Length: 302
Image (tube, rainbow, N blue to C red):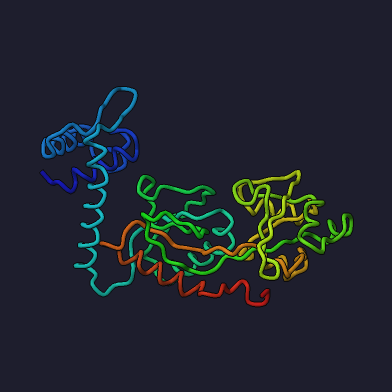
């Protein structure tokens, strides 16, 4: 039995949810797919899947076997690439998870430059405003804004994420301009559903200050909040990686500059340093060099 192909069939069946879909994807007949699965189960010595006409589910043995099959297939691919193309440029596929706002504002242009340099690499961007499970969702690299990361993951700090309090000139003409952070409680604040929903935290003259805020618009990603702020709906706390252009053009005005919202690290996280694909290492180095310790989008804002 070609065990690597049997593992590939098994992983594809699980990912696509059926033997028929896997057969179409792998350009194999349904009987061949069934035979590969049966032979893999014989080799492992346990049933890997419960198969019915309506659904497919993994057994306990299947749950244990699946991640190991993925790892072996990845190692086989790395070995083949290392032997066949020892001095070649990065190649292969990467799945990257990133928030919608950072993905659109900064990562997408960076990835465009990367694949222009390394056209043999294919990048799949997952724009998700939630924390993903890297193993379960087959993510090679996640970009996360946090000072408190999962200790089971490996993190490489890329740069710093700062935020600003800002509003459109139209809103300030109608409602006045707050001069102290305490006055934000009297304004319509556009809040993030997952970050600082009702409390905004600042450092003012070396002291930590927390201000209760409320407003009539909340959203689970900051691009929507910026759109509402540009429309004059209220005051928003926005990351500078996203708001920098609007601040420079005057479409948004920075408020209370002496009050500094909490800065967060922008990190690249992945599952393990062992057997790291060369393409992933190349992407990490590229992003670290591009974003630098001092974020380029803040060059004339701080």
